[in-house]
Structure formats: C-alpha cells, structure tokens
Image (cartoon, rainbow over all chains, first blue to last red; front, side, top):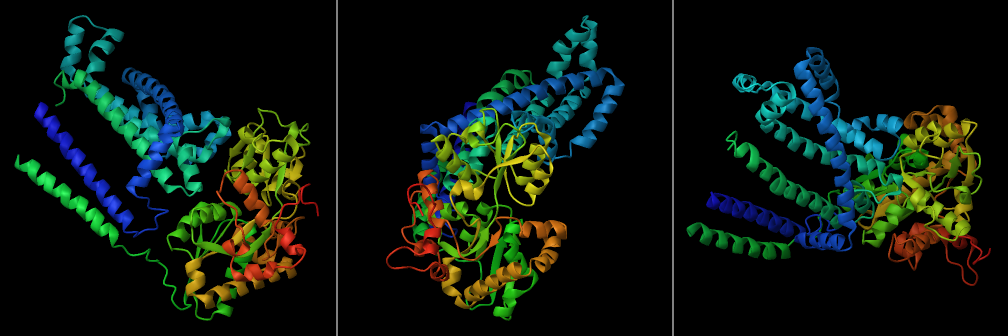
Length: 261
Length: 353
C-alpha cells in the first residue's frame, strides 16, 4: 500500500516537472511575446510576491468564502429537495422538469437576471454559484438515493429503523459515494462560477474582490505573470482540497466500508 | 532501481534541453504578412466613439489610398483584448483609450499613437436629488464606471482630488459595470446611484426626470482630452510605410466626412451601431463631441496615471508615444509653448492659462 502511493506521487511529480520545463523552454525561445507568455520563473516570482504581500491570500480567502457560502446553501437545498423527491412523487416530477429547464443554462448567462434581482453585490455572485452547483448535486443525490440496494433498506426496516433514523443510518451511508461525487463536481463548478462572476461584478460592495477580480485586474494592467500566479493559487487550493479533504473523507468512509477501492 | 536511473537521465536531458533550446529562439515571428503594403488588420470596439473607423470601413476609404489592399476588420470588446492581439502580432492598428495604451507602453509594448479619434462628452449623472457636487456623495452610494483604470475612473479621481483633497476619496464608491448594465441599474434606482455615462446611454438616463448631471468630463479634467486613440505597432509602421500613410489619410478623410456631413454620416452609422438614425445624429452632434485627429490632453493624462500608480514613467517627449504625423500635427514652438502643445496638458490652478 505504502509503495503504491509513493511511486504514484513520484510519477505525478515527474510529470509536472517535465511540463514546467517544457513551458520554460517555450517561454525562453521567445516563440510568443514574453509579455503574454511569461516564463515559469517570472510566474513563481509573481506568486511569491502576491503571497508575501498578502494580496493573493486575501483574494483567495474571499473567493473561498463566497464558494463555501454557495456550496453550503446548495448542499442543504439539494439534500432537502432530493429527500423530499424520494418521498413525494410530485416533488420528484417538479424537480425533474426544473432540472431539464435550468441545468443546461450556464450560470454566467443568467448574469443580467441576477443584476436585476439581486443588485450588483455579493448576492448576485452567490446566486450564480448556487445555480451552477445545485443541479449537478441534485442529480447525483437522486441517483445515490435511488441506487440504494433494496436489501439494505429491508435490513434497516427489519431492525426497526424508520423515517429519520432510516435516513441517517442506512440511506445516507449507502448513497455516500454518489453524494461525494456530487460534492466534488459542485466544488469544481463553484470555482468556475465564482471566477467568471467576479470578473464581471468586480469589486462591488467596496471589498477587495476575489481571485476572479484579481485575474481581471492583472490582465488590465498587462501583468500576465500575475494572471498566471492567480491561476497557480487556484491550482494549489484545488490540489490541497483534493488531497487533504476529499481523499481523507473517502479513506474514512467509503473506502473503509469497502464500497469503493 | 533501474526506473530511478532512467528517471534521473531523463530529467538531466530535459533540463539541458531547456537551456539549449531556450537559447536559440526565433525573435517573435509576427503573424501578419506585412511586407509590402498588401495586408492590414484593424481592430475597433463598440460605439460611436469609433465612428471615423466605421466610416472608413463603410465607405472603403482605405482602398482608395491603397488600391488592392487586403483589410481584415476585427471588433473586440475591450482595450486589453485589442492590446493582447496587437502585442502578439495579430492586429496592426487598434483603437482604444489612453489607459490600455499607456499601461502597455509602460510595460514595453512596441507601439505608438498613429492618430487621435476625438473627444466624447462624458458626464456623471445621478438620480439622487440631493447630489449636486461630488462632495454630496455618501459612503453608501455607488458610482458605476466601465472599468478600473478607465478614463471615467480617472476623471472621478481628478474631481476627488480637486474637491475633496484626496484622489482616492471615491475609490470605495466605484463599481465596474458595463454601460448597458449601469443604465439598467441606475434607472432601477437600487444599488447604483450614479453613472459616468456617455451618448447614447446618457440619452436614456436623462430622459428619466429624476436623473440629472453632476459634472462633465472636461470640468473634471480641466480642459479637452482625447477619448479614443488609433494605435499602430512599431512593426507595422516601420515595415509598411505605404499602408501606414494610407491609413492616416483615409482616417482623416473619414473624420472630415463626419464633420461636414453629419446627417449623411448618421444614415451610414445607424445600422452599424444598431441605433435609429435620429439617435445617431443626436449623438454625433451632442454638445462636447469632437471628431479630430489631433490629440489633446495626452501629457495631462499620462502624468495623472503616473501619480495614480497605473504607470511607472511619463513620456518625456511626444516622440516616445506618437508617430511623426501626430508630432507634426502638434508641432514644436520655440519660445512660449504653442496653443496645441498647451492643449496636451491639464489646466489646473498651477499652470494657469
């Protein structure tokens, strides 16, 4: 087990290193104008400058705050709606048609609507995040609930579990792989939504803005190294969340229970 | 063990490759085939500020001065977008405001002003009755400008400096919204209390009886200033003199046409800008509109951008940021500065005039 994860790490690290070297080579060959294709070294310098001045950290935290707010609200809504849909047929039908109508719409396309309803502050950004994230979550939750093997529910009912206890004790753990997959997709979608929305709404409400705004600003100021440094920040946060959060949740639940390998 | 040995060898080769290949590199192969006058790519944005370019296109003026030329027109949404296209050699001449131009110039972009396009009447409007001057704004008000470091934001900073003593006093009130969205928000009377607007958006706003003007751009700047410039890459100017000259001549003719025949120009421009002919004519002849190829206010704007921290240096000489035809239009008077030279500065209490 230990050997497998060690060689996996080395393979991934080697691949990334070779990619970086390729990038640096292309940058140094000046095949593209250096102002629009910065070298790896200039990107790293810009990144370190942003971290040490606190600017990148501040922006990342703000974007994360918006994402978390949107994710938590969406999770609760998705869980509630999916649970109700399992109990009441009519809720399931309504949810289905809502999903067909709204899921294909990209969050950013609803921007003008968001401005009209929620104004130009945080509310609009949260609205776009929730819209981008709710439907994939609902789809995954519903699939998770529906694919619970009948036998699990029977055993639960046999030992006297009913209603909420059945939900907590059997349905939730049984559908956990799908729930987790839904959350992972939602996390990636939330990033896309927040960066795109921030680029449009910018630093409304007088706050410093998030990473999307930072990307917009560095682009305006013709600071491509800064733009890539912001992308690097997003990548690092993504890797950290994946390795430290998701992998560990999986390790202590679905992997431990033998539901996935 | 063997894996590790191969890995190390592979890495060493890759590292060496980086340094060797990095040394030999083409110096920025341009993507436009500009040797010899047959091809030119022009980029513009949306709106009547670009009317001379639109006239040039609709009336095929460039073809008159350079028969057989192949023109590629690109319409992009923002100055930075055009800047990226020009820096990577995809566009020869681009139209943008002073901000993206000077920021690019400051960071080493090899381009200069080929012509001014003119001044446009910018005005700060609000629906709040009690706001008559900038000092009447409170911390909960919001002022919409098209972009950070835009001319509108700089004009607000200049006003803040003049009336409130601190150019950053209004920073927290400013929000970046595109003109159409700003109009919707302002007329909805919810979040946006004021908007630094221009025609044709300002017509819609002023039609609402609650909305009134607080100040205009020239008051804020302290004189006239060019709103949009035509910028050309050094490469285009140096390797294709006939096309460059043809562009300047055609552009001047377009401006002359608009100024002498506004009604006919409105007829041509209306469908291009998706406005009615009446609205187009109104915009073209609105108080403060001035299509002119001679620049004004360049040095004043550059100095303000430097003190605001958007750029690190001010051009010491017009030749650093403009091609010879622009320099010739401004001239150089010995003794006292000429009127046109003075026009490039801001009129403040300091330099009188």
